[in-house]
Amino acid sequence: MWYRAVPEERYGTRVFRGISRRVFRESNGKAFRGFVDALGILAGVDVTDKRLPAGRRGLTRAEVASSQRGRIIAALFDTVAAKGYPATTIGDIVGRAEVSRRTFYEHFAGKQECFLTAFDQAVADIGVRLAAALADVPKDDWRTRLRRSWHTFLTALAEHPTAAWSLYVETFSAGPALIERTSAVNAGFAELFRKLHHRARHADPTVPAVPAAVFDLYIGGTAERIRHCLHTGGAAALPGLTDLFEATMLALMGQVDQVSRSGD
Image (cartoon, rainbow, N blue to C red):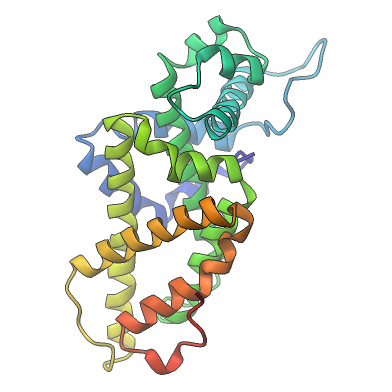
């Protein structure tokens, strides 16, 4: 599942703050209403188990609620990936999560709000994983940061195949709010690569200037390639895209001689 207990202080990283600000702006302040709740889930109890232990649990009310919420979100990803978003019902979700309908509605107003929160939680987890992966990489080592970022991101998707399918395929059938959220997050990631390009040019004057919109196209192209891989090779094959995504960015930065191999 895409849920782990993570030290809360690690959310203050520059990597994720940039994405969160961009998403917040482009969604008119509404996009991260669910994200705030997602931080509580990620920083709380591990919800790997389907149910809490029977009997006296010794858990606070907040911990019980966090566990329930995490199981509901995991169930949504699993069900949406299996049936598709339009066909998924609240009954499907609560049955898989092993909670009551009443419990579901204590946390979410409906299926779409649950999906929006799940989306935000996945983005939050990616931000934490990227920050951890890049923590020991010097800021001027942009090539290592490029490759490690993609490897971390694609590995995270591969480890959570139902979430990957839900986020990259099913969002298009989940309504305007999910499409808006996807666009905003993609814009945030494009901004990260613009900053990486700026850092690369500062470190190496031979790196050429490129139009800012190129990075939006880059993120859009990588997203489409991820979808193609999910349809043809499955989530397990996603880390194999690291070479291609790295090679494409190196080419954009005029570093063709450093491209080891581009993949198919």
